[in-house]
Image (cartoon, rainbow, N blue to C red):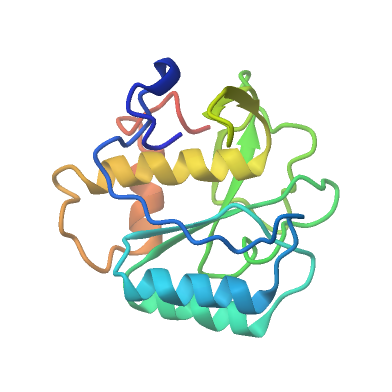
Length: 191
């Protein structure tokens, strides 16, 4: 998605960026707060600019909250998927006060029906029929706040790799949100 580089006709959103991944789920898709914390802490130690958390849960977790706060204090932008459980509230960690909670919209720019939306969404990105490369290398069509979160972070990564963003450590959450939602910052990408 971010770095497709021409594979299967996809070129990605930010093909020139370096992508680090941390697997926090077992083969069945289950995760634990300890794995999520270890991944966040490792990525922060690697001095990433952006952190994407395209998953979450119902319960707040203090340790994950501390890892997110540490990331924010080191100038890392933390993008989190809001969740697909409307009318349930936005998942944690997206509802963490320092996270950028990302919701999903359809082609008509309205929220997809399943998108969680309370207590807040910070960004809304396309999350309906988004092309991505599946694990087997084939083209897949994705839907929901996880893919919208990845898309939003990809657009942010592209902006961070261009002037005047390059090398700006300690960008504030509000500064980035203003830039990403400005009329000249990919008006077709964000609602």
